[in-house]
Image (tube, rainbow, N blue to C red; front, side, top):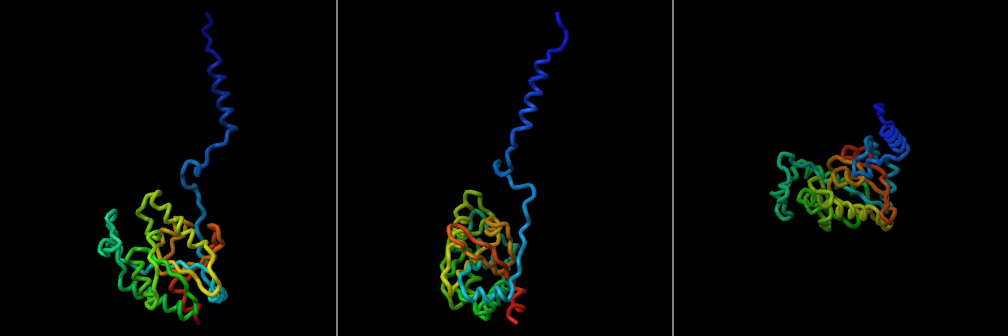
Length: 223
C-alpha cells in the first residue's frame, strides 16, 4: 500500500490558482461599491469674463438655499411640505443672505427666466427673499435627498439632470433653488449656503460644470 500523499489535490489547487490569476476581478462599481479613491471635486471660482457670458444667457444656475438652524433637523419620515415646523428652518441670517445674493444677481444684470424651487420651506423662503418680485414653480422632484433611500433619490437626481441639461434660450438663464446633497449625489459637489453654481447645458442629459459664485465673491465681481 502506498502511504505517500496523492498529488491530485495539490495539482488541482495549483490549477485553480492559475485560473484565478488570469480572470479579471470584479470592479467595485460592478459590486455597487464606491471607488476606493474617488477624485475630489474642485470648485472653480467665477470670473468677470464669465459673468459677462452669463449676462448673455443660455446657462443653468443652481442656487443652494440660505443658512439654516441645524439644531432643528427635518422630522424624517414625517416631513410635511405644507408644515414648516416639520422641517429644518431657514434662519433670519439665512434669509438676509439669500436677499443679498438675489440683489447681487440683479445688480450684475443676470437675466433669470424660469425658476424651479424645492418644495421644502427653506428653499421656498430663500426664493422669496432673493426674488421678491418673481413667481416660481415648486418642483417636488427637487426634494432634499440626504435622508432618502437610493430608490427614492433616483427620480430626483434624474429630474435635476434634466433641468441642468435641457438647453436654455439665449437672453435668459434657468434658475434652480434647492439643496447641496442633491448636487453631491449627482456630481460629487457640496456647495456652501447661497452659492450660485453655473452649468452649461448640452442636451440629452449632458451638462458641464462651469464655475461657482459663493456669496463672498460677489463684491469682487461687481467692482
